[in-house]
Image (cartoon, rainbow, N blue to C red; front, side):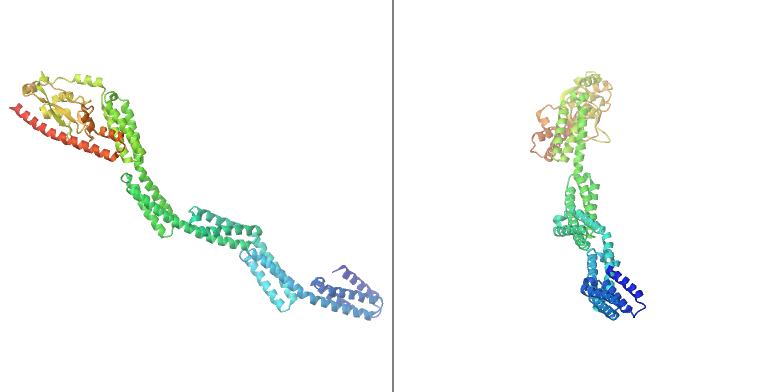
Length: 564
C-alpha cells in the first residue's frame, strides 16, 4: 500500500468520526473504491494501467475532500467513480500480468531444460512442465488470475529443477572423463588410423561438452558427450578387432618361422605351447573377445621368439663352456706337448664365435664342441718329461726282445666296442698272442699316443711285425709287464685324431685342419665344412679298414708260421 493510500485511509477514518452525527457519509462507496484500488495494484496496475489506477486514486482523494466541504453527494459520486476506474485498471492489468508471468515460467523451464533437468531433475522438471501446461490452459480460458497463480507456481518449480540440475553438473564432467579414457584406450590400438572418422567425431564433441560444462549448458554438454561416447566406443571396437586380426596374422608368421628354425627341435615344448596359444587366439577372436585374443597371440609370439632364440642361447652357453675348457687346457701340463691341438682348439673357438655373430647357431655349437674335444686332448696329455720317465719305467718284454721285431708294421684301426673296449693290452694280445708286448706298440706310436692310458676310436696305430725266428723263445722268456692303468678306448666316438702328423697329406685330412680351412676361406658354408669333415673321416676310415683287413690276413699267416 502506497503512502498516499495510507494517508487517505487516515483521513477517511477521521472524517467518519467527525461527521458521524451529521448527514450520512458514503463510507460503503469509499471502502469499495479502496478495495478495487488495492486489487488493481496487486496485479501490477501501476505497470500495466498507470492512468486508470492514478485516476482511481485521485477520485478517492476527491471523495474525501467533498466530505470536508459537507458535499456528501459529490463525495459519494467521486467514490463510485474511483471504484470504477480501479476496476478498469485491474481488468486491463490482469491479462497482461498473466501473460508475462506465463512467459517467465516458460523461460525458467527452458533454462531447466538447457541444464538437462528432464534427466538430472526428472521429478521436479515434470511437475513444473505439467503446471505450466495448466497455466496455459487457464490463459486460453481467460481465467487470467488463476493463470497468473499457476504460472508463478510453474516458475518456482522450474527454478527448483534447474537448481537440482546445476548440483549434478559434475556428472557431465565425469562423463567427459570416461569418454576420454575410452579414446586413450582406443589410441593404444592405433584407432586414429584404423577408425579415424569415429575418433574425429568423438574429439570434436568432447570439445563441445567441455565448453557446455563451463557455460552450464548441461543439456548441450550431455548430448555432445553422448555422441562422443558412441563414436569413441565404435572406434575402440573397430581398432581392437583390427589389431586382434593383425596379431593373429603376425603370430602365425612367427610360429611358422619358429617351426622351421634350428631351435624347433631344442624347444619342442615351447613350440607346442605357441601353437596352442595361437589356436586359442583364433577361437577367442571368433567369440568377439578381441582383447583376450590379442593376449593369446602375444603369448604365442613370445613362445615362438623363445624357440627362435633357443639355439642362440645354446650356442652362447656352449661357447662359454668351450672357453672355460680352452683356458683349462692352456694352463694344463699338456699345453707344452700338444701345441698343435691347443692351437686348433683356439682356432675352433674363434670360428665358433664368428659363426655366432652371423646367427649360424647350429654350426657355432658344433664348432664349439670341436674346440672342447681338442681342449680335452690337451688336458689329458701328460707333460713330456713325465712321459719319458714312464716309458723308461716300462719293463723289458724279454731277452733280446728288440731283435724279434722287423722294420715292417701292421696298421690297426682302433675300434669302439662298449662291451670290450680296445686298448694296447688287447691289441698286443691280438697280434702277438702276448698282451705283455703292449709297450712296443706304444713306443712305435709315440708320435700319436701321449698317454698309453688314452687311445681314441678310429686312431690308426702301427703294430710292429714279429720276425719269424726266435718268436717262440721270446714268448717263453717274456716277463710280465703291467698293462696300462687306463688303457682303454675313451667312450666318446670321435674322428681319427693324431697328436702329431708326419706328412702334410695327413694333416690336410684331419677334421681340425678342415675346420681351419673353413675359417680361412669364409666363402665356404659351415654346413659344407662339416660335410667335408664327414667325407674326410669316411675316406680315411675306408682306407684304414682295407689296410686292417690286409694286415689281419698277414697276422694270421704269421701266427700260422709261428705255430709250425
